Amino acid sequence: MISDDLFKEALKVLPGGVSSPVRKFEPHPFFAKKGEGCILYDVDGNRYIDYCLAYGPLILGHAPEKITSAVCEQIKKGSAYGTPTKAELELAKLVIERVPSAEMIRFVNSGTEATMAAIRLARAFTGKDKILKFEGAYHGAHDYVLVKPGSGAAAAPDSPGIPQDTTRNTISAPFNDEEAVASIIEEDDNIAAILVEPVMANIGCIEPEDGYLKFLRKITSENGILLIFDEVITGFRIAPGGAQEYYNITADLVTYGKIIGGGFPMGALAGPRRLMEHISPAGDVYQAGTFNGNPVSVTAGITTLKELTDDLYKELNKKGEIIRKGIKDILEDNNLEFYLAGLSSMFQIYFTQEKVKDYTSAKTANLEIFKKYFHSLLKGGVFVPPSQFECCFISAAHRKEDLNMTLEVVEESIKRAVKQSPR
Ligand SMILES: Cc1ncc(COP(=O)(O)O)c(C=O)c1O
Ligand SMILES: NCC(=O)CCC(=O)O
Image 1 (cartoon, rainbow, N blue to C red):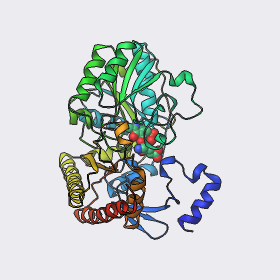
Image 2 (image 1 turned 45 degrees about the vertical axis):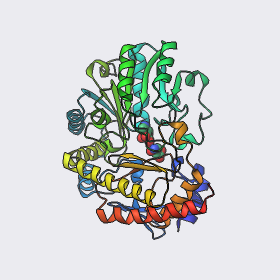
Image 3 (image 1 turned 180 degrees about the vertical axis):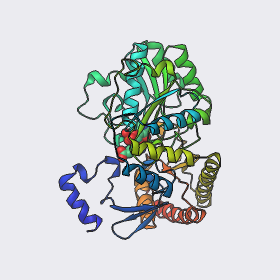
Image 4 (image 1 turned 30 degrees about the horizontal axis):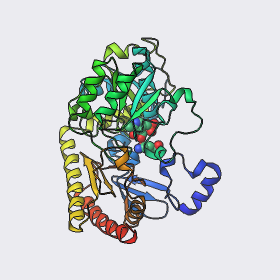
């Protein structure tokens, strides 16, 4: 059966034909058959150089041999125990080695669970109710954070089904705007935490302006507010110690997901002992899960972190530079002033001439051009997330030839998309 037929079948049994809204695009998504290195194959016989990489976790590419064999060995010994394991202790230590601010860690099953637990802990610790997040930031699909969210939820914001009593405790501010945050804090002494994606990667890829994270650190410390870095995307991607290391800022709590599970379901919440010891059963802030610290995910996480050496990060950064320099040249050669964003092994082109620094400027992007660009890339054998408001990722498995081939397809696709779209 080909993707077209499978999608028709899927629509009958899966809401929207998919298991997560970001996966849907017109006329229908392709159905994946297998992934190998940086290549994703579909059931229709196509192959794509993959820059979606399952939305970020696959930093080593699809099915890396070391992970596959470690995981297979683990599965033979059991897939869940409901008891502690030596492996989760090993992963905890590996994270703590890389992330100096982390003295303790709680493993959960997703980024969503991690931010939910972080918020609960922050509220319990500070005795305050509200959280401040940023417009266009996505922290998962739970009630506390679906206020002006990014990613797929940007198209359908403020989901029905969330009590106003919940969302009234979530304030959002424009990113990279010091005054907005300062005035909210001045007027409200009931803020438990600022929750921030240090690099906003769910509305494309927006870096913090110079000094912005430092400002957040200072204003939170001065006002008894916890600073939570949501590093579900940046964690173990932009540096071994994530955005805390990259920008040299120490957050109070950090949430992880994606890469930490080595391509398997996992999230985590990490921080100093003084905070983490409030989590049950050490403390009374309840957090639990049947699959927390699942040995299969933990094994994949350990194997992945061990592969992520300084040399590998250098290589990944170099690949990011090749792609970004290549796209910059394409834009210049064609007299196009679109905004190119990215760092390390992350990138996105915004089809706008504005400098993108927050949700409002990101929203000036021409989505018609993006759609044409996306479909043209797909036709040329390059898969990126199907939304202007997601980020593209590069893996250790992408080779120079893949990057060069990609740049050819990108050039053709940008030209075609612009030509076909009235501006
Ligand atoms: C920054 C950030 N936080 C949290 C999440 C939620 O993670 P998950 O999809 O694993 O629940 C995501 C997912 O994309 C994310 O990008
Ligand atoms: N950047 C948004 C995501 O990664 C979400 C993935 C999903 O829900 O499938």
